[in-house]
Image 1 (cartoon, rainbow, N blue to C red):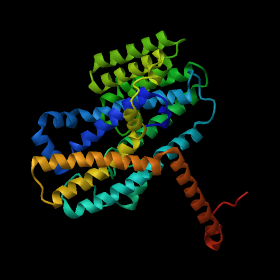
Image 2: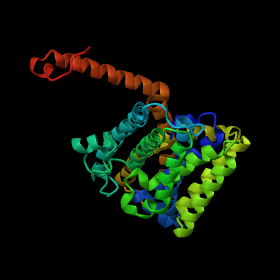
Image 3: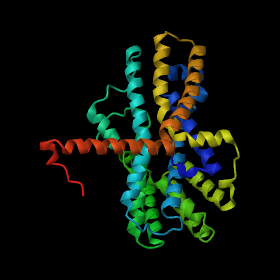
Image 4: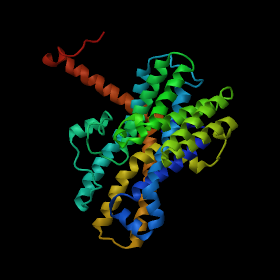
Length: 369
């Protein structure tokens, strides 16, 4: 979910559709509104419930495609330490993510007053929040404070693994070959074992297909990379067919041919899709708190008709888009994120300066040079 997708209408369109599918999957999964919707329209809402989550594969492939573009645009090894890049990625993800976690905690506290439903997260503890802040909540077994937050942790793990692999390669072609080797291991082994689904290696097959699509779209290497990518992915599907991997392969091929033909930067020329693609991460982050409030209001006013449920869902959908628009403007956008990061840095610097003046604490802190 990167801002690197600007001026790439095809990526914006894919992100927009994927974000809306994830939103509808959650709207079909949580609370009395979801139950009412699935009972009234079992076909469409049942489909969203079963298959909407697969839209995450679109984000995985796009993330791998853009990571290859940013880290190894010509298949070269990463020539600098990956740590500053990993830290930058962490900040890019976590600043809006923690703001959204705060909204989810508030929404859950409100919803708990009016609704008794397993979709409402339990009251947050400090250790639980801290685990979320460091993106290790799933690894440590903490319950999620919002729907879909596992993906942010996985996105960070994937980027870090990609950067380390490209840095480890130390030579042209060897670096992307390492990426492809780990992606192959993921497709044939790790992705077939759900016990790995809290780790990047489980999803690296799709991420690696995205990276391979970027390298394959280079005119000088198109046939070789395309052949290797197709052979590995098709073989993995023959060994164990998974619809999610077939979808990832389709998106990777679309991106590769889109860049090759120029469609990536030209089509579709639709402003609504471009806008929704731009705010897709914000949609992903803020729609669950909105859904919690919508479900609690639905329960609070004892509404139970199909019409009232559909109206509530439509209003929740529209409110999610509006909230995401404001969230992007105030929290997620590069300008807003820089302001927030600078303010946090200033606050931390002043806190440390005050702490140094306290005799006991000051002796434990490193001196400024």
